[in-house]
Length: 230
Image 1: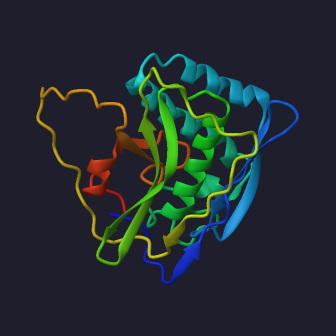
Image 2: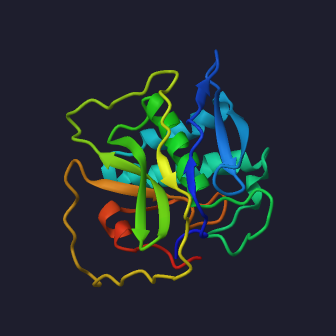
Image 3: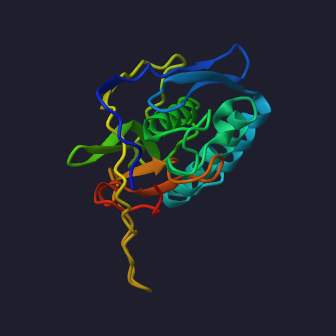
């Protein structure tokens, strides 16, 4: 499963989340694979308020991860109304050659930017946003946005109004054609809640445009788990 094989090294364009004088915010969205194209999307106060209110209803870290997945979906749907990314489908094969398609580099960059926006507003109470994570199988790569659960007693790290750029050096060799089926979990098995510091991917590449992102423990994702898409 993983994105499409690409050759060479790619330095991602610096992350851009720019709030305006009002409560609006602008996010630059990457698309057409490897962040080759970008389009600016401005989220207005009303659109952001819906996301804020949904996140505020989350009473614990588990609920917040669900709210994050839905918030990312809401923001992607809004962005799809004014940019070509509305054409994006899960994986790479279903939208191969379509203008506006996104590979895992685009998704990991965009989703991280959206998460940084939520973090900068102080709307994430149980998680902090980390830089994208890579998983590799021989020469094939896949990338995803990552969050880390915080101790509820610790204050959230709120980003500054103008976020510092991050330019992670990502190998542009993205995606293995080998599908990996998700592992079956034991029915009725009780899993203890993760401790503070547990990390999770927020992977929007697995789903069609505007659907809730897949949230998985980072360790499971690194081990190949996730929906069977190509």
